[in-house]
Length: 120
Image (cartoon, rainbow, N blue to C red; front, side):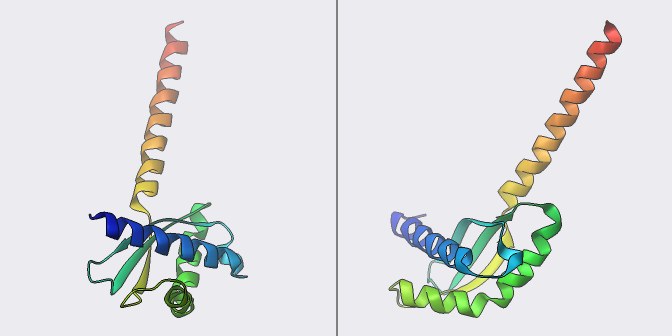
């Protein structure tokens, strides 16, 4: 990925994070924009999010998809590019994978502690 695309992704992430924070939708209270991946032609951007609380993830995605046109309009007024990208929202797979790894490690640690107490 070029430096230019990294800068564009970073700017889009900052603008969207600020606007989502200003929105009054309760479903978006615990949403963090973790990354943005913009297509090379700047017509499409996938916005990766993380939500505190697994049960709130789907509600947050629904709320963001409903506010997509508003967020795209804000993006168009804040950044100067030839095209304003169409926004897609998705859960950040890195965060979800990290949670899974953490749960596995926690399980290994707990089983190791059980083994130690049995040996004593």
